[in-house]
Length: 328
Image 1 (cartoon, one colour):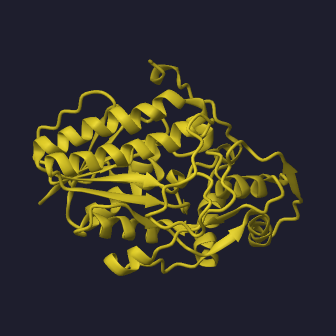
Image 2: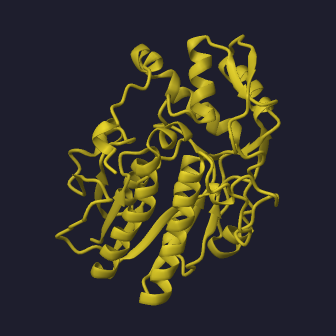
């Protein structure tokens, strides 16, 4: 049985990856410091003999006694609400955390996959975005703490690959959704669904002309799994290329939830990308991968999850204490 370390294991993506690797017969070591993760996401794995958990901050020295065959680095705030509250921690997990895991992978002779993001493209001037597009990123803007952390993460990973011959993989993740998303994380799908379920009007920023492309979690996990076991070391986009404007998407949510809310408009946040659509030609060619679950089906599954949350969860606001994590 091979061992895999998954950082950010209590997060939305990380917890689904834990499930997948256990299903595939791996022994999974989950790691998280719960800065944005949720213990509930891993509750169903507590009694599983093929899962163990280590509460740890990856920006600190990492020590694992067992052999490691694979490492998946998914530790990072990923929502604008989070990384604007903890900007320095966001930069540290992308830099110091990645450096620590690269060192661990080198010592263990393990293959390391890093979770990059479509945000490396910034507010793109090329559409759809291909892997050879270098991006249009404001390095000193409020979103730069996330964008640049991920861009640095890619650079240091490729440096270890070239200089040390380390086995590395890079997945650029586009907007992903599904069960276990945090209702109050600020991203558009939980925001719209939470507002609809609470009877609130749906908030659209700007005129709603900006576009996004949403990939269901099962498709995303399958893509990540294939990237890890491919022979390709450069970045690969994994996302759903079916694009929709935010205004049209808000109208879809109102129809799906059978509510009568209005759409209200607010000012567009600084550096909010106007277009986001992956070119997945490379994933099709190298991985024989493309998403299988259409947005209508995926959104029904996601709405069922959010609708099943308790009244307290539905109305709970974000009162997390970040102070213990903010040590510069």
